[in-house]
Length: 633
Image (cartoon, rainbow, N blue to C red; front, top):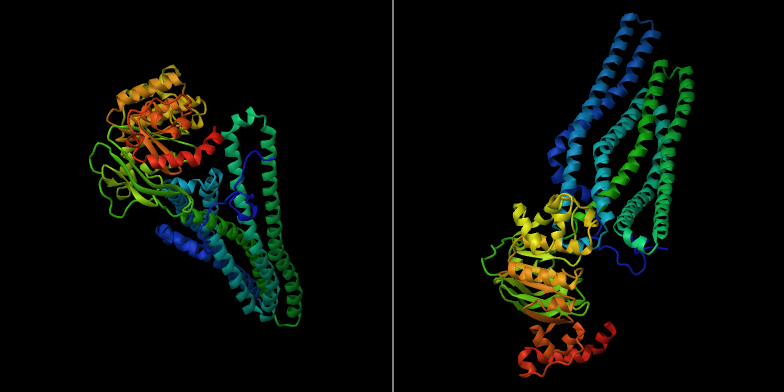
C-alpha cells in the first residue's frame, strides 16, 4: 500500500489521476549538445587537444606491430644485430611516446571537464532559482536533485572520457583494419566481414538500452523523491503507524529500479558479447588462414605477426566501444532530462526595459484582474481592489475562493492573465522582480526555515541587519523563545526547522519578513498555529511596528480578521463585500456564514447597499452558495 501519490516523470509509469510534468518537445541529442556549446566553447581547445593526443597515442600503439614485423623479417632474412637493435629502439620510442600522449590526454581533458561540470551545475541551479513556483510544483525534489547532480555527472563522464575514447577506439579499429589489409588483403577482408555482425547486434541493442536508461534515471529520481517525502513526513508516518507501509512502498520502487537495471544489464551484456566474443573468434580464424598463407608463400612470418598483433590490439577497442555505446546512451538520456529543465520557460520574467519602482507609501491596486493557474480554470475574474497606504486589509473566503492567488500576484510569483496589479501606480510587470521583492515581503502559510542559524534565517531578506535589528524583529513577532535556546539567535536549527514547533516556525517566518522592512507585507494566514492570546499580542505589535506598512492579510480565523482595518470577502474569484468587521457583520450574511457568526446582526442604520459597493453581487452570491457554505461547515 502506498503512503502517498508518487509522480514519476516517465509517462509509462504515471499513476492514473496524476498529471505528469508538462515537458517541452524532446530535443535530439545533437540539438541538445548544440544548446550547451556556448557554455563549452571556452574549453573546446583543450578538449580538442586532448582528443588529438589520444588519437596520437593510438597511432603510436598501432605502429608497434609494424616495427615488430620489421624486426622479425630482417632477423629471418639474415639481418645483423644492428637492425635488431634499431627495431627495439623504435618500439621503445613508440611505447614511451604512447604513454606520454596518454598522460597529456588526461591532463588536457580532465581539468576542463570538471570545470565544465561545475558550470553546468551552476547553470541549472541558477535556472531553477529563476523559474516561477509553478514549474517547481510539477517536479519532485528527488527529480530535481537527480537531474542537477546525477545527470550532470553522467554527461561529464561521457564528455571527458566517452567522447575521446569513442574517437580513439573508432580510429584504432579503422586504422587497424587498414593496416591488416595493407599487409594481407585477404585477412583484412575476413576481419571486416567478421566485424559486421558484431556492430549490427550492438546497434540493435543500443536503442533498447537508451529507452531503459531513461526509465532508470526517472526511477532513480522517483526513489529520491520517496526518501525526501518520507524524511520530511516521518512524524506523520510514525503518528499513524505507517512506517512499515512506507518501507514496503520504498521496497516496491527499489524493486522496479532493480528490474530496469537488470534489463539494462541484459542489453549491455548482449553488446559486450557481440563486441568481444566475435572479434576473439576472428583471431582464431586469422591465425589459421594466416598460417596457411605463410605456408603458401603469400605472407611472411613477420607479416603474420603484425596482422595477429594488430588484431589483438583492435580487440580491446572493439570490446571497449560497447561500453562507450552504453555510456553514450546514458549520457543521451541524462542530457535529455537536463535539457528538459533548461527548456522550461520562465513565464514570470523581467521586462526587457525595466522601470525603477517609484518612491511611494505602498498603495496596492488590483484593476480588472483575471487569473488562472493552468490557463483554463478561472481563479480570479475581473477583480478590483485597492489597499491604501499603511492599511491592513484582510481577505476572507471559502477554501478555493482565490485568496492565496491574490497574495501571490502582489509579489509577482505568478502573472495575471488580464488586468494589472500596481504598487504606487506602477505595474509590477514593468519592474524587475528583484526590485519588486525588495519592497514586498511575503509570509507563506507553510513556514519554511533553512538548516542554518536563527540569525541567518531571520536576516534572509536583510543580510546587513545587526543583531539588535534582528532582536527587534524577533520581539515584534513574539519569538522570545529564542532567548531560551542554547546559543540564542545563533542556535542552529534542524532541516526546515522541524526541531521547532509550528507556532515557533511561524513566528520566525514573520520575524524574517519584519526584518526586511517592506513597503508592502503579504501575510498568508501567518498566525494559524498561534493561540488566540499570542495572536492578539503579535497583531498589536505588528500594527505598532509596521504602522506605515501596507499589509494584505489572508485570513482563515475570525480572530485574525478582527485585527484588520478593513475586510474583503472573496467569493468565486470576486470581491463581493468590503468593509470593517462590524460593518460586514451587519450587512453581509455571506461574511457571517464564513466566520461562523450565528448571533443576529445589529439593525442597520443605513441601507446595506451604501455600505457595500457591490451589494447586488453579494446578494446573488449568498443565494447561490448557501448550500455550499453549509456543506463546508
